[in-house]
Length: 350
Image (cartoon, rainbow, N blue to C red; front, side, top):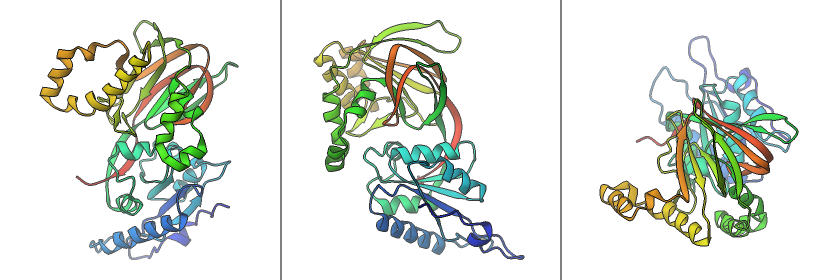
């Protein structure tokens, strides 16, 4: 059962002579992590945040309100209720799905979101440089970190029936082999070995057929291509030391697009080398960039990078799509765009 969102009179220490205490809601997934450890980490971080307050005009933080996600509400509704009740901070505690759902509820609110990652991929936490393996430190950053505005990816998905619906993503959305990879990853293996299970799922997805897609940027002519996958990214770091979209920035108002077109298993190996070595290491120095230009690997057609504020994609035949690693069924088309600066997140201070 979800604990009810406390009313204003329950969670504040207002007085006629001073400001009210700031309110925090923790939206958490009860199936992720050790819940007792999570509560202890948040309460300890809250105590440290209270101790650090030196402004006499600041009455500090009220006790947190705990909101448990359910099958019927993965976090969007709970987050909106918390905001309606005056939350000054909402902490998303769970996997990528929980973080995405909380962000969808907070989109456009201007209220900061803290992230306590408890999942397998922890994609947004990696891209925000959060210490994703340290629950205690992430909880403290939620209270004492700095606010950063970031873009939110939006995907309008079109089904075979013609019906369409909007969904948000924070890191990447993909149609093709990446969606098949997540679908083929075995949950029990993921529990045992974490993100490494995605590699096994990926290997079992390599036989996925090529997609014939048509894509178009605003004001430009349409293009067609045969690809293994097309990705729209808001940021580019993935588990396994992979930097799939090296130029992606979470606050540039644009999406980075990747077309993966390997012809053989050796093509996949070349892509693996590019995203783990070239993008992650060589591109970070002038000498390394010279090596890339000299070898000509930056011109390889098996991995094409594009960029724009939005992108329309049509697929010949229904194909699976994923948003931040979660499957969202089959689509015949998608419109991706960046909602610039729509979310405020707490990140480590420089």
